[in-house]
Structures are given as C-alpha cells and as structure tokens.
Length: 228
Image 1: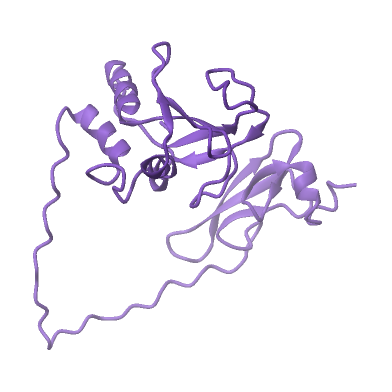
Image 2 (image 1 turned 45 degrees about the vertical axis):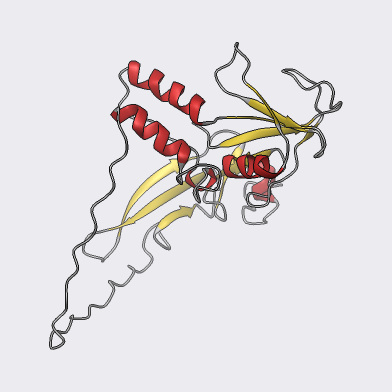
C-alpha cells in the first residue's frame, strides 16, 4: 500500500474527474521534491491550509483530490479508510501481513491526525483487530562506576580476492553484463561469491548498485568492452 499519491497538473481545472486530461506532472512537494509524486504527509499537510476537494467515487476504493487554485493539481492516493479496506481484503485472503511504501511519507509527525503514522497504524490495527498497545518502557539501570566496558576492535575487511574487490556488489570489469555479490566469510579471511547476470539491454551500474539501461551505464565510461 502506498503512503503517497501520484499527481498531475490538470489541463483544465474545470475538468477534474477520472480520465481528466493532464499532460504534465504535479508540482514537487517540500520534502520529496519529485514532480508527479507527493507523500501522504505532504498531501494532508497541504489540505490543512488549502481548500482541496476530496472525492470518494463509489466505483473506487480510494480517494482522489484536486486543488485548482494551486497549479490545478490532481492526486490519487490512499487515506486511512482506503488502507483499512485493503488490509481487510488481504486479511480475508489469508495473508499474514502487508507492506507499505514507504515509512517516511506517512504522517509520521502526526500533524494531520491525533497520532503519528496514521496509515501504518491503521493497517496494523486492521490485522490485529484492536488498538496498538503502548510499548513497555525500558528499565532504568545504574552502572557501577568501577565497572569498565571492554573495548573491541572491528574485524578488518578481507583483502581483495577472486572477483571481489570489496564487500557487496562488484562489477565484472571485462563484461558489465555480469556482476558478483561478495559476502564476507565468518572468519574474516575471504569472501563467498554469488554471481549474477543483468537482463538483456541492461548493464550493471556500480554507482547505483543495480542493473541499469545500457546507455545510462555507458555514459559513465566504465564498461569499454560493452559500449561502442
């Protein structure tokens, strides 16, 4: 479930229902700063100071909202009622849980609701069938001033070996279609290698640590054997 909305700029503020023409993304929010995307916290906080129109269409299970004076923005998003409905559906299907994307775009400061993380907590309560209990407080302990905590040195990183120059993902310098994930052995003396191959049309991007489009990787100048 998304703790965010997808947003567009309406071509005509008077045409604002489903399938309304919108050729451009909505404005970027103050936190996410990504055109066409607003976190739920950005949407609900903006609604506190501006007169958005919220629509719950009976044919849909989540709302949309628009605010014509503010750049004619239109957003489809999830609110507490819609995530509760989706969580109920998942529970009825026998699923053991749900996930959201992502934590930091929920109303984590509780500015729009009586509590922080309203969307996530609504999902949890739907699955558990009750309120979220208050976590117990940690017991207070007093340290003996004569007691000293022994210091330990971090385990050194194993030296390069085989296809592993460092822990984590390593690109094959001769053929960027291939990569290897290097996991340190328990004794700290070397690595266990897990090779991988990127899909056709992609190469491994060591900056993003992922398979990326060929043209994007070739622009970095790191795969001479794969880039003409």
